[in-house]
Amino acid sequence: MTFIAPHYNKAKKNSLIRFFQRDRFFVKTPGWIKSLYPDCIWDLPKNEKVLYLSFDDGPHPTITPFVLGLLKQYNARATFFCIGENVKRYPEVYYQVIKEGHSTGNHTQHHINGWKTSDEDYLEDIREACGLINSNLFRPPYGRMRKSQIRMIRKQFAGIKIIMWNILAGDWVQDLTPEKCFERIRTRIGPGDIIVFHDSEKAFDRLEFALPRTLDYFSKEGYSFKAIPG
Image 1: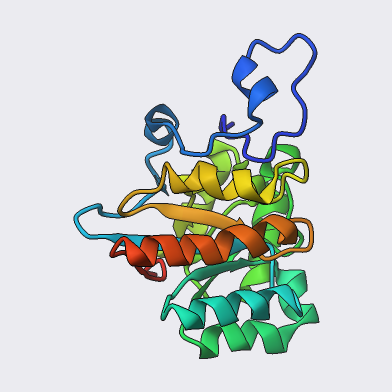
Image 2: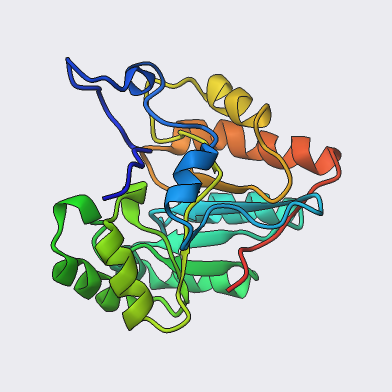
């Protein structure tokens, strides 16, 4: 079982993990977590000033087009990890993402938690989403999956890449101010980082503030924004 808790809500009363009592998640993924799961991709080569924006949980009928509009302003490309049932509900938005030159990834059919799901059911949910999302990129919801699930995914889906992240915006955390959301990532982002935002209603207050400022600030710093290669 992985030790990744990006969507941690509230620490247990007697938890020894004091970090999560304070911050709830790692903004920048520690190297020791990456070393435990070398089969997952956490970041990309750092020899150029390139950033890899990614958006989880869409498509959404209004928020995803909002994101697409901002990306177009900065000639930026990104990767959208889509939930299969949302693709089924809003296929026109999904195809707009592709038409505008962005890449997509599988985020399961029903946004299920691998820690709470049998290996067989987890793979079946991924397989169902494959019928709607044509991609060899996969990101586990919540970042939570067992090592046995990683092995089975790599065995059963030829050429699949399991994409994690180096930077979590934390935009889903509703008591995090938009200003703090942006400032915490601004001071930590560097070349080759895979950055996670969410094109979802829960995240929108922080996304609306932090995304345009991220694009503007790092564009002025000489960065370009590319899609995660398949």
